[in-house]
Image (cartoon, rainbow, N blue to C red; front, top):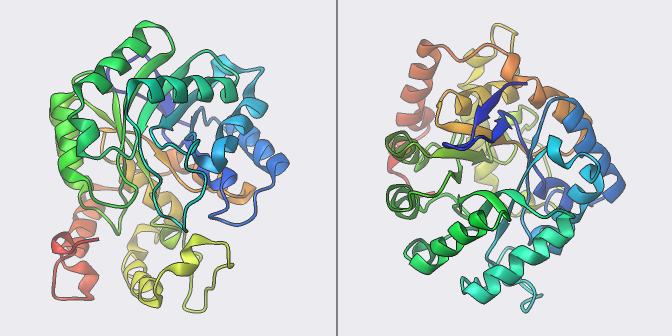
Length: 334
């Protein structure tokens, strides 16, 4: 495993992190807490030290399983969590519909204290404001509160997570340029979905902000396991995507075969190396839900970097939408 610094902090995070949402929510199948805890511990054994969760994941389960997995080795792991959604007073929602957000001082203080209690710790290494929209980015009092949390020793570093879907370019750029205290920004970025990630990487380079990338495998498309007959379980969120997502995605993936021709890296590892080719990216958060995936992804940093020629070829493919449509991918709205 290799490690990178988070912003200008002294926090070193593994290039491959562990997004706890996969093993704490029902979006990827049934959750087995014992298996989840075992997988988290195995990840640590393989050099992964960065674990990213949120208070809403499993309505707190994403935090409690980290406590159960690492309560006796707190100083060996970097824990990030996210707050901002009021799931305490709004327990019901339809499908993937967002819950209301509350950025008031009273609620944010309450939410952080609840997270600390569930995590079984008195500090969070990296606290993120969950899926910040412009109202949060423009909220001076909110970022002053983050500084207070740092001064109180409850937070080592803070930042924002953009989402829930691809987008939020203006919010991310503005946060990086105007909120000097943030150490990192979390975003979606991968070989198939490079915008607005490319502009956010440029802003991170300009401001010295670190990036954390989730969905580096485009919801599994870049793991190399799908074919035209792939189906998903009823409780798997990918089941609700249109058929075109699968068929067009497979056509694009076929064009990326040159990344694995040498046999030195799998497609899943190449997808991670593509994201890590940007030095502004501190860590990636692949979806890990079994030991085989863990082994493959944890080994990715040791595989060969993508060459300048490979990166240039990827850029050409992306700009032509992999030859599937006349309209360039960078001009389409995700």
